[in-house]
Image 1 (cartoon, rainbow, N blue to C red):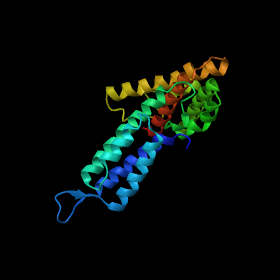
Image 2 (cartoon, rainbow, N blue to C red):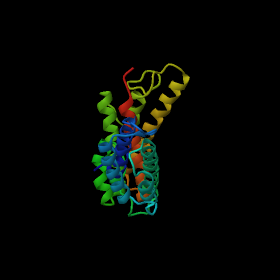
Image 3 (cartoon, rainbow, N blue to C red):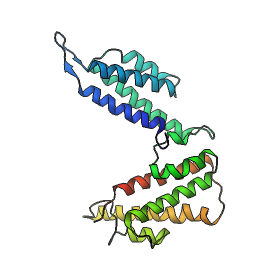
Image 4 (cartoon, rainbow, N blue to C red):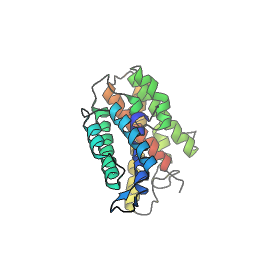
Length: 232
């Protein structure tokens, strides 16, 4: 699953776990709450399958879940959900700290527009090209959302995200803090154009797998932030 993979499965099962907890009801003759049986069993099976496939801590999370989430008591489902969240956090950290050649970019929750242009290049070890295409996709996204196809690079970012009269705003622009954020974000987008896209568009810099992944992660974050902008 491009742009999602294992992390996306973690997030999905965490949401299902929350839904399972929401079904908790007092049971006749018992002083404990029970969650929906069918939902619990299906969720439990899916979680154990995921933890078995991502034993990043020597199976610690799998064993803990297996031991502490056995019955459909609300308290046990809650413990199981906590274990699942901890496993997700550990898995995410291990992705970014994995040695070269063991980083699976498909497991990162990249923005779909960014993933679509860089995942294949990264997997074939074309790291500078992956970063270049990711940055170009972000810039095109800014043009598309702002309607300013007549501008490019830093001038585009300065015009679209200006704190004085922006085409796209990250907040309500009602106080100094809002204006500071708007200006700061403008400079970050500007930096992608000047410091990331341009050197790779005009030259041949070398990018390690780790550095390329860091750049792609930043660009993906900016694509997500762009989704949140609005026209003032």
